[in-house]
Length: 166
Image (cartoon, rainbow, N blue to C red; front, side, top):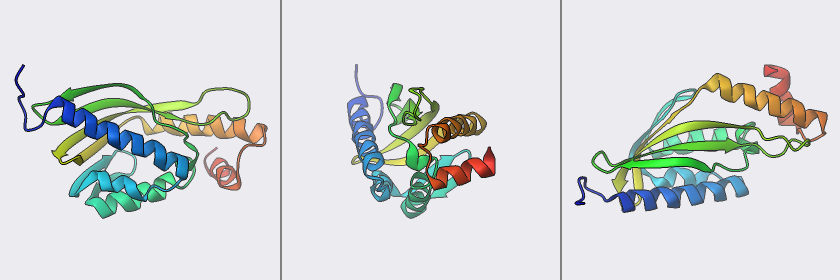
């Protein structure tokens, strides 16, 4: 089958796989500054709970602030449930699982989102949109924080979050 878009499914998939591998590194290290470097300088990031960010530096500021504070700072990994590529539109759509660590009782706490990535070539993306239910995500983080607190695994920032929202 001939390619129908400016980039092949393989190129789009490989670019997202590289971004996704790096995301795990950012989660492991706690340093999210490099996340925005996967986007073009004029990229748009649509995040339904936080707003729309325009340009690499707005994306960087938002991602660093969000992922280095509770609950983002506690998430351990973001495995994919599935993904598809629309080569003609240069888009990759996937379901990302947002996992929290064991809060102390062995229970699993996660919420997923649909992510729509628009590829721009050279390993970069020009747009990301994360689609999810913010209330479901919020409820999951509160459940996790309550269990973690019961087992002595909730830090001061998590306690403050629980006090404010729970």
